[in-house]
Image (cartoon, rainbow, N blue to C red; front, top):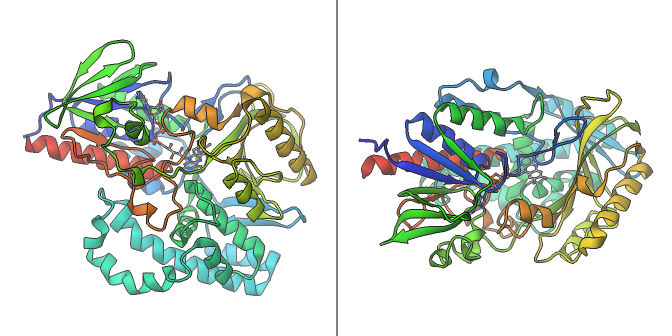
Length: 495
Ligand SMILES: Cc1cc2nc3c(=O)[nH]c(=O)nc-3n(C[C@H](O)[C@H](O)[C@H](O)COP(=O)(O)OP(=O)(O)OC[C@H]3O[C@@H](n4cnc5c(N)ncnc54)[C@H](O)[C@@H]3O)c2cc1C
């Protein structure tokens, strides 16, 4: 018998928390979401501007089937709820010598595109890389990513059968960069496919080669939502509210109270206490170690599940007119020496010549000659960060716009300091994460399997979000929210 009168409290309205809120409320549970910011979405957020909202967080929406499944589970059709469309052109890549490569979500088009820019041999090398990424993706998708338990894949028959093939692909060298050197003789292609390690906050020079499967995730399809990706958060909030979820914004949870190893209540920063026996924490699990949820829970999560930290970023969000090279929706401007970039980051700096990702978003609402832009620069998380707060704006501005004009793209309207989100600002937006965007660093060989699982050893306390299994990125954090909702439902049925 389901205990529908259980009051479930979700701490945090990031994508993980929102997905859980939707699914649990659809099951008829009474749900309250407490969020310290004044908006839903967490990192999935927009920057307000005179030209309309500008996506200032995620821009690449992949694994649409994960979201489709979540909406279906809530008796909804995602394509009716959101104006979604697929981008055939995945990304445009520019190098300082003027070379430009487009990649698509069709394998034949990619072979053709790579052959045209880098020759037949490179296309054949890519073909092998692509096939290996596909094998890895299908081996780990059902057994690991869609499985609520990080170690659960070891009991899956299909996975066990695929082990010899996986050893073949993932065997020595196990590090990503050396693997890329084996796959590709063209250094620019190593750089392009190495960049996928940064999608989960790792350096291509220090990460395990398993991260190559992220290429296949992107290949499966990159989706856009008219109005911007942040509208996904607004929609999930709206649908949850229709199911009766109460959202409490601008309040933080300062303590989760435990009695006899059971959750019993929560304290808020305004002195209020909420009684609840079921709590889902959607913030970064590092908060427990930091004592931000009470000293009783400091040892809840193992240090290896949250440390070391993944990368942070400097993010510009602004509107401008541009001239020069033609931009697609997703664009990457590479440098000549990729290794230098990550050496600078390890030394706590941003590179003199950083790789720049530019998302060219919709036209401005007031001025049709301006587009809305998000530009991302990789950066160290706060503990490592040695960039002085008073200097970071000038430094980022100089390095971003000098590089871009050298590479043939001119921004007429330059952003101001309020258009820049820094690692310190990320820490203010979601405290306890050390300004890092993707939780645990993916750089250890076994990091993928070491994130905390949804269910904790405290009865009634669950986790969801990018710091939890199966990891960061919108689809993964959404999956953790789905896993959490399913576990809560199952556990409440057993009480
Ligand atoms: C610049 C940038 C670009 C990115 N690009 C992509 C991309 O293109 N594609 C992609 O898939 N992913 C991308 N990501 C990663 C993706 O955004 C995250 O992995 C995902 O959004 C994390 O969701 P989450 O569920 O962990 O919640 P978060 O977004 O981390 O939200 C957690 C929420 O919990 C709240 N909270 C925490 N503690 C408390 C408390 N004690 N009391 C109350 N509230 C609390 C916080 O305020 C926050 O709102 C990007 C991230 C950034 C920052």
